[in-house]
Image 1 (cartoon, rainbow, N blue to C red):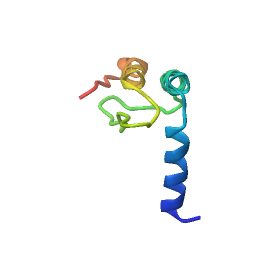
Image 2 (spheres, helix red, strand yellow):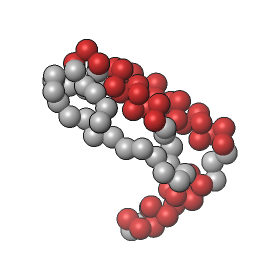
Image 3 (tube, helix red, strand yellow):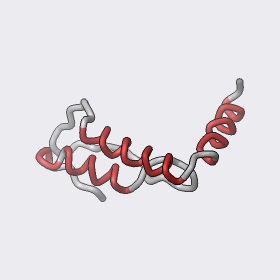
Image 4 (spheres, one colour):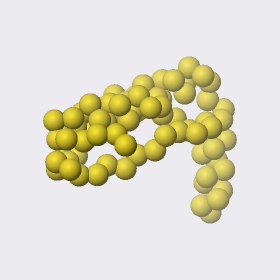
Length: 77
């Protein structure tokens, strides 16, 4: 399977998700951010994304990430 075929397959699966499934995935991603087992140094950088189209997630996952590492001085920019 080529990379483009894999992307098309994943996109089709995402687009077939119900609104409930998309919201459930967003909640799961936000909860996972609270349990993220990665140490971050003060002043460190964490890369993330905001979903577009049918991608799962929400800004709640970024809020969870910031909240999880707030004591390390992490902030959202």
